[in-house]
Structure formats: structure tokens, C-alpha cells
Length: 116
Length: 318
Image 1: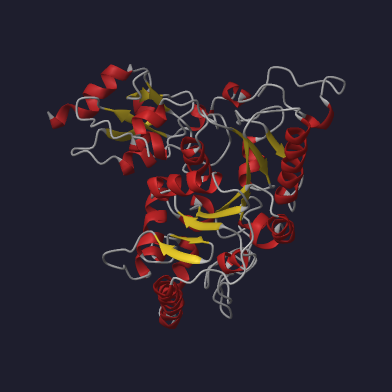
Image 2: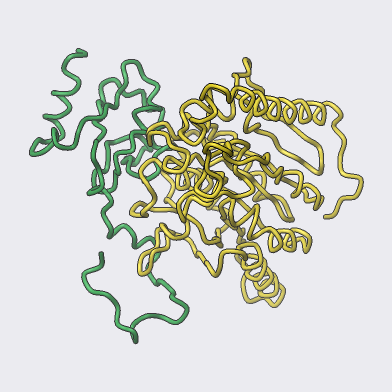
């Protein structure tokens, strides 16, 4: 939620919202029960995860390549994992509880170590 | 069509932070629409009808839209966008603007098939230049899965529940595409987010048409249909592969089928993973699945024949 609700005389006529895309202040990542973990070594950069992500939570670098997952907004639906075509899959779901207190790199090693 | 890497570099028209359920494809469809739109050439203005997408992406004081967006009521997305478009044309005539702007109205099936139908019909008849996108999730999912005229035969909803006497919705879906075609508009199409390239091509084509256009998109709803969130795109793909949701376009009345499954799957493949159809698989209800299959086959055959005959509207309007 916003830090402070608007007063009646601050609300614009017609309920106009002045800042486009300000819903970014609302971090939907807190909804997550499971989280996807990405393995760049097997990723084939098909960008299917990007085109199918409902929450625009796939980070894209300046070359238009997949650069990781934005855990601030990822709701953990798992569509990216389901649609990942690489073999073995470069994305895997783990429980959020298991990810607690670990860095992304540590998680990556833990989840994908069996495949190398 | 550009590669996905190229499209990923574009500025997003719909940003994160909207409160759609995890695994909801409303935003997937809209992101694909924005990816398809040639935003270097023109600007986009969107009008929305009330529905899941509107309440979750325009929750005051937040908005997930990076483009001008307007919402007024449930029934009038099409009339709202007509008004905006009419004003733009007057401004252009008077020299107040020289921008190229394209207009999109977004609604779900409740705001298109039922409540918004007369506004949509009027807007198409008047010939405004806009693209109407219907995200069809087969019921009023925003208020908790009530039956709409888009609910398929046999589908169980809170207002058409299955029980000892009834088996869910008794009527087949409304064939909205035929209703829309009846207006003799230049372009109408049916698409699915699972086939993103096809959807993007259709959006691109529709935005360049000078006149009203309509795209009907399937929008699998994880809570209403009852399947796990990660299956959303797969459900859309199954609907396409079983011909429950044929991908086709109607160009001046001429039907072009964009995707013919190599092996047409039986409808059970589509029905099985969904809780709303679970009762169809109970003993003694086999006739319902047969009826469902018969309806799907009949519609598919009809489409194939229409494509074969390749005839345009008798009367067209520009």
C-alpha cells in the first residue's frame, strides 16, 4: 500500500492517476509460495519465459537477452518453468521457504548441481 | 515479425505490480499486444471495461498502464473508445495534433458477450477506427465465476452448478465471432496467447486497418476453470489443439484458418485438467462429453467449409 492515503482534496477530478505505471511501487513478490530458479548455463535464450510471464518479472539486458528473474514482482506462478523448452530445463521451481537466507548463486548451485 | 530479443528491448506498456492472480493470462495477452504494436510509429490509447483486468491493473491510486488508459463503466468500453477516437479525429482535422494514435478497447467476455454487446455493436456500426480485444475467460471471473454467455456447454459455475438434477450450463457458447461478423467489419480474428506469434501478427494487422477490428482471445482462468497456475498457457494450447478454440481470421468475410492441428486431439484432453468439467467424467455422464465433442466438431467442420468456399461479404463498408 501507499505510505499515506490521499486526502479528499488531493484526489484529482475523475480519479485521474498522474504517474503511469506507478503500480511498480506495489511489490507482488511477497505473494510468492514457490520461486523459479534460473540456470544461465543451459538457457538457450529463446525468451519464451519473457513472452509468457504475466508479471513482466523476467529481467532483460540491453541486448534483449534474459538476465535473471525479478523477485520483487514474480508471483511464482510457474508458467516460465512449464514453458521452458531447453533440455534439461533452465528454470526450476523450489519452495520459497527453502530459499530463505540464501543468495541466488547458492540456490542455483543447490538446485542444478545434480545435472552437471 | 521481429525476434523476441528485439521485442524484449521495447518499453513495456503494461508494468508489473498489478494484482491479477498468479498464473493469470490477462497480462500475458496485453503484454503480447504491446510487443506487437509498432510503438515507434504510433501511440496507443486504451479503454477498458470493468472486469478482472480493470480492477487489478487500475486499483486507485495505482495504475499498471504505461499508456493513456480510461475506464468508465462495465458496458461501455466500446463507446468510450469511440468518443476518444472521434475527438482525436476532430483534433486532427483542426490541426490541434499531428500525432498518429491507435485505439484499443480491452474487455473480458462479460463486458463483450453480454453487458457490452450493444455498445460494441454500435461502435462497429459507426465505423470508428479501433481494435477491440476480448479476453474471453468463459465466465464472470471477477465476481467469482458466474455463468456468462461465453461459458461452454457443461461448464459448472456458481450460477449454473452441477448437481443431482443439472449438469452445469445447458446451452452452448454464444458464437460471438458470427455476431461480430454480422456487422461486416473489415477484420475480425480469434487468437490464443499460447500461439504468441499468431496473436502478434493479428494485432499488428488489426491496428493497421482503417476501421473497426475485433480480436477474440482465449484467457485461461486458473481459479475459475480450476487448474494449477503453471498450466495456464498449456490450457490455451490444448484449447487450440482440440479445436475448441480455432485460430482463424475473417478478412472482409473471407475465413482464413491460421492453425490446423496435425492431429486433432479429443476434447477430453482439454476438459480433463479443469475442475469445472470434472462432473462430465462421472459415470452416466458420457453423453455430455459426446455432445461437447459433437458441438466442437460441427463448428470446426463449418469453419473448414467456409474457408474452402472463400467468399467475402456481399456488402462491405470502408
